[in-house]
Length: 466
Image (tube, rainbow, N blue to C red; front, top):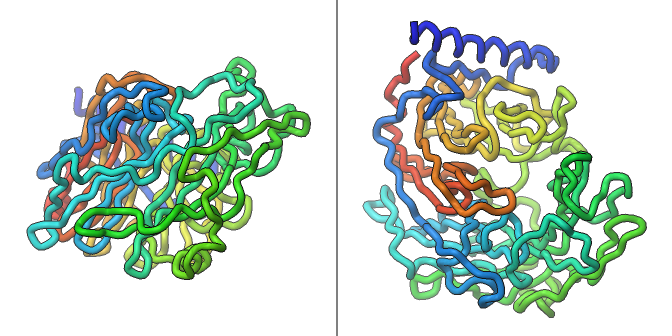
């Protein structure tokens, strides 16, 4: 009876997904997910079989930090918010980097940390070392304090930063953004996009007001910067000053009636030189059209105004990942903030094309997925559930039909609660790297610890139960 119930439940999930896809008006589904009969979104591990051969480890476990102490951070180990992790391969070094704050997502004084691993065993393994391989990639731009729900103050003192590290022409470049979370909106169009223009009065509130729909935080653009890095004596160090691409605003026009001053920045951002004063190789890195990026870095190409667009009108597309079909087409997989626990996807013929609006698929998952290809051309996607307690992998031979799925991690860890950081959490926001004969996936655990999973390619040859 139990197996029969599971089979019916999985079949219903597939049928409901197909109906939703048909209503979206798609000519062909971008991808088809066929879950095993045991799939159950309410069960630990989602009812999926555990992938044999996968190995899991913790790369970073932080200590609590207190506001006002050395900008909030007593050491590189302090700060209970750790998230937005990425991986970069540079020579025989693997650089893992992420955002770090006291305990809030994109909170004032958010900085960037990094940990450097060295390839061993002819590139098949990574030696991460100890605390000696940990470093601050970008210090806080303003003093680190807790993020407030009420932003009625006259001064904007909530600057945080994020960014990406890129290997180009044999050199490393940190391209960063300064933003400030300030105010709330009831309109998704103004959420999670760095704002450069005032928000309409009717769509702005100074404080969080969920009762009236003002639940989406506003991100204000303050500036972009670049800095060159390199390995010197085996250690990753900055080899240039921080250069801003343009002047940092002293005031922001929040609405037509509200104008606020921007608090002074910390060093080295305060009085940092502009890009026009940088050496030519740094200027060229910024101006050249096609940089040597890893597949998950940068934005997938969309026509103007299409980035959040969904074919069914639920225009809340957010995070993304891409993979390539053996036939050559590229597929982008997106989550949708207005439609939880199902991924959207669209297809383009080549990297020079733009993606059309996302189409609702029946592939289960939420938040930041990651996808890629194995050396034989087959495709894989790693996703997770809405509670962010489960991480699973699904595989496809042709990049269209994903018919083999496994559980990777199930964890519900108690963490320090903060803004956009619940008191319990598991694996989320996945990034990946392929080395030798294995797939390496990095993720945060409850937006606090940084975890790593290694999957030998051979493990994916095991069939998953139907």
